[in-house]
Image (cartoon, rainbow, N blue to C red; front, side, top):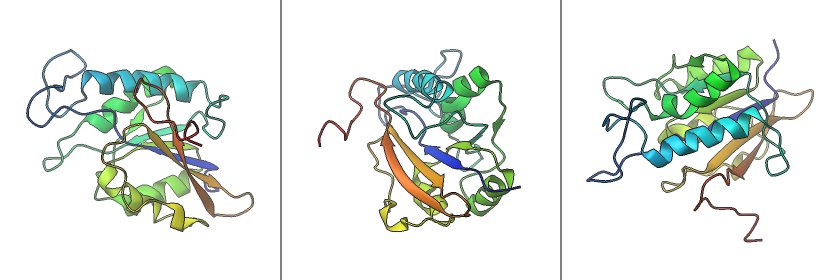
Length: 188
């Protein structure tokens, strides 16, 4: 099987505050510090619409994913935010979420994505995201940021496969989904 044509990466939606509001809530509306904030759940719903209806005029590089992957919660990394962020999309598309990889298993994740051949959306721990992208063969690897911006929940990082190769080209796309999201096209 050939490598997928497109691999898309997102960070989880907005998280609870460290010392007070906004609070994290689970899918039943109960307090949960390992889940998303209300704004994070709002972003998850907006992402479901964005990806289920891709491509669009504002997001021509984005595609409907054939596979949805999210960082697995563990005893040491308790966050459910990655899984919760892609749950509305997976339900909308009738896909199951592959949460078999924790954030320390980036080599296994990349091997699985490359062997799978399906376009993939990956909601991953932002601290290790640049290292994950660094495991793909990328012609413009110098364009990959060294760190996912801490304050940004509104980005999509894309790896688009160059036809007839196993090599990718990196691009960063603004989601522009919620009030306050950045839009670098407006600043040009």
